[in-house]
Structures are given as structure tokens and as C-alpha cells.
Image (cartoon, rainbow, N blue to C red; front, top):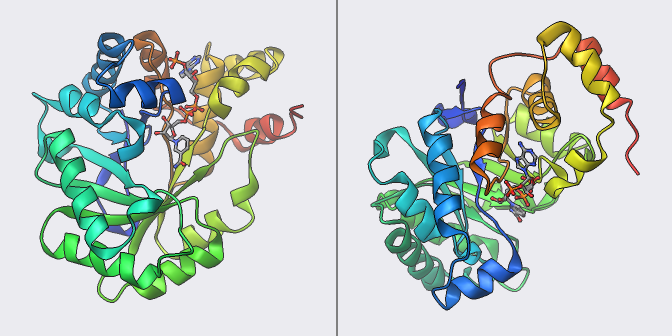
Length: 280
Ligand SMILES: NC(=O)c1ccc[n+]([C@@H]2O[C@H](COP(=O)([O-])OP(=O)(O)OC[C@H]3O[C@@H](n4cnc5c(N)ncnc54)[C@H](OP(=O)(O)O)[C@@H]3O)[C@@H](O)[C@H]2O)c1
């Protein structure tokens, strides 16, 4: 596995992370303590950790924090980068702190590496939420503050609401079939030393289905056989120093495959060929 500085934080994070949003049914059932496919998902996460991935993304809403907590047991906590998110209905000062404590308990850890605001909430002043975030950093409950699903203006406003710390990262959808953030978020993040976390890096699976197989032959000529997942994840890390894809895989074989997305680089010409593909 390869590691890169997570923006200005300087923390070494694997270039490929792992997402743990499964599906709405999993979220609902997990509230009842029912977690279908738990063991397989646990194995998948452990394959990633054993393969050197140290970055796992979850959220209080996903119902997967206990799974992540179990997956990381036995691994060196200091080497891991655990990211979770606070839901927009918990953005009042006291609510943020309570939500953090619940996430810590579910994850079974003493601190969260990256605590992200899952979505903005216009009904809560961002200054109030950020005051709570700074309290959490000051008290060692979280290390870094992140955002998710914020527009560029909202990112700038959120940064302005912080008194002592900087926004470490912004999590947005990004893949070969959804390049909207190249217009604003990515350049801003690059300029300001912010990491970008790419969610839906496989287009929620759609990219795997729709990617034209003949494009793989061009890549194979220079790099040996690569799968669609490996190519489209590599496209992100070849193109950007500061963008970290977090594919989710319930299938351990998929994680094994995704590990092979690191350790090589597409050429500029190959990147151009991939970017000329038109998706429906
Ligand atoms: N911040 C937000 O609002 C937000 C929103 C959505 C997602 N996210 C985060 O981003 C993560 C990734 O998004 P996502 O899970 O929705 O979409 P994704 O990672 O783009 O795609 C997941 C799909 O790709 C499949 N897959 C994974 N590796 C594969 C491989 N090597 N070959 C073939 N198929 C493969 C998975 O199958 P299997 O599961 O069967 O292995 C699953 O069906 C989430 O888990 C979550 O942590 C954040």
C-alpha cells in the first residue's frame, strides 16, 4: 500500500480508503440490532486492513460504526485513520458533543481521527457547530475537523467559523463519471492544503458496469492486466496528490482487487484516453 500526507495534517493515510455505507435496509435493520452479511463485511474490512489500508470512513447514520470498531480490534490504533460523521440534525453545540460520545462508544475508540459534518444544516449557525468541533479537538475526542456535501461557499464559510483550527478535508462524490468538483472544490482544496475524500469512486457500482472493456486493453499494454475498479481508482490517485477514494466493498475479493489500485501510475496519455470516455 502507498501512503500520502492527508493534506496539511501531515498524517500518513493510505491512498485508498474503505467506505462503509451499505444500503438503506442495512441502516434501518442495524437500528434493530440486525446486520445482514455482517461477517462477510467484517472479513472484507480486515482484508483491507491486512493489506495496509489504514483509512476507514463511516458515519453515525450508516449503522456501521460497531462493525468498524470490531474490524479494527487487534490492529495498532495509532496507525489507523478512522473517519466518521455527525448527522445534520445533531449540529447544535450540545448535540454535536453527545453524538461524538455515542460514535466513540460504538467504535470502541478513545478518539476519532476525522470528524466530519455529514451535510450542512441551514437552521443551525455554522459558528455554533464549529465551536463544538473546537471543543472536541481541545479535549482530545477528535483530531481533525472535516466537511461533507458542502458547496465551495459553504466550505469557505465553515473555515471562517473556526477560530483555532483549519478544515482538514472535504468529502464529495467524485469519479471518472462525476467530475463536477474539478471546477471548484478540488482546486480550492489543493491551494489550501485540504484533503479531498472521493465518495462514490466507483459510481456506486455503475462505473464498473458501464466502463468500456476495450479501454482496459490500452492500460494492459503498459501496466499488465488491470481490472475496471483498479483503473478507475488509480485514475483518481494518478491525477491528484490530495484526493483519497473510499470505495466500499462488502465482498472480500473486491477489497483484494482494490488493493491493486495502488502502487502504479497511469500516464498522462492514458488519463486523457480515460477522460474521453462518454458515460450515458
Ligand atoms: N458523505 C456522503 O454523503 C457519502 C455518500 C455516499 C457514500 N459515502 C461514502 O463513500 C463510500 C463509497 O460509496 P458507495 O459505497 O456508495 O459507492 P462505491 O464505492 O462507488 O461503489 C460501491 C459498489 O461497488 C462495488 N465494488 C467495490 N469494489 C469492487 C470491485 N473491485 N469490483 C466490482 N465491484 C466493486 C461494491 O460491491 P460489494 O459491496 O458487493 O463488494 C458496491 O456495490 C461509502 O461506503 C461511504 O463511506 C459518503
